[in-house]
Length: 336
Ligand code: KG4
Ligand code: ZN
Image 1: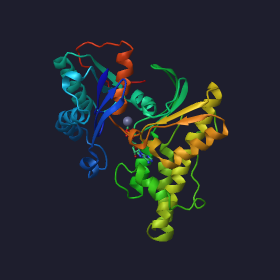
Image 2: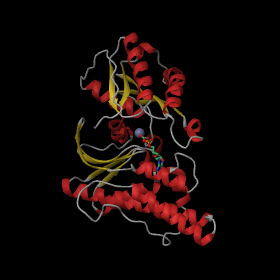
Image 3: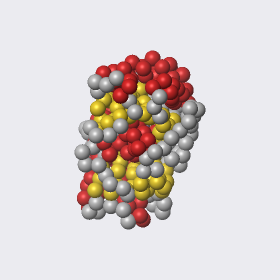
Image 4: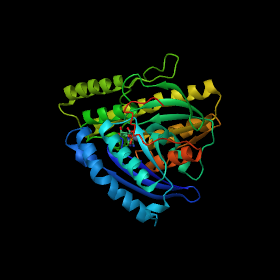
């Protein structure tokens, strides 16, 4: 079975082919980051227009990369939500129509399920059951994963997602959108003892998160520093980036530890854009070593949005015998 996967939920056009026997045999990605950079965030209308331009050429490139013809494809998976409605409609319409023309099944995949299963593309994949920490630009969730499709939401952010908090704080520090990775690089030069940010919602029971206060804390810290220094020095920017990042990471680690304890599970999967964060990966690896458990994450390239995770999730579902009719359905809001 060879499954073509198409991801267009936000600002990356991702196309990949997953082969049941050989694994991933093609992976193409086009990022729109530059297109949206001047606006400080993703402009939905521009995103849709760019997906329209890029999706078919990327499908062509993926077929070439795998040395396949259209007739070799056995099914098509596409991201059906959650995400920007126009962007989702582009990928789903192209996917469903191609599947109709090629006379193969098509399947709509949940974007966060794609993220959650991405670590399974690695050499040592996690076995079910596990706890998944999903940290992206739109979501922060702790999920108990018992099996494919058996997901129990244990906790989530009540306001900003972790990635969103990274991006907003990065913007305050003068970094371009999306600034998560740049903030993390800046933090490498930070003095660990200069500022301490709060660890929101860790002093009460439960597995929910709240990250919007950290952005406000960063804004206040910046305002105070400007009052004292006149303007923000490079060192102060780095110190603030460090303190912010450390607060997010420690908060995530505390909740992961709690979720593992409450469920008695020993395997932790981290996925989504923020799981590319080196410091987060290190700290969670340390935590799992202390707990005598294991941690799994995708290679950095598959932490952020990509077609490979959608091809893989679609493969598992089609292999399971799932079928969908010809109607095209997208769900901009879709609980997992
Ligand atoms: O999963 P993703 O590509 O898109 C969504 O589904 O939202 O996640 C994008 C998010 C952005 O907020 C971005 O700043 C963040 O992931 N991100 C990072 C890093 N790389 C990407 N945040 C912190 N550290 C990083 N290294
Ligand atoms: Zn994503």
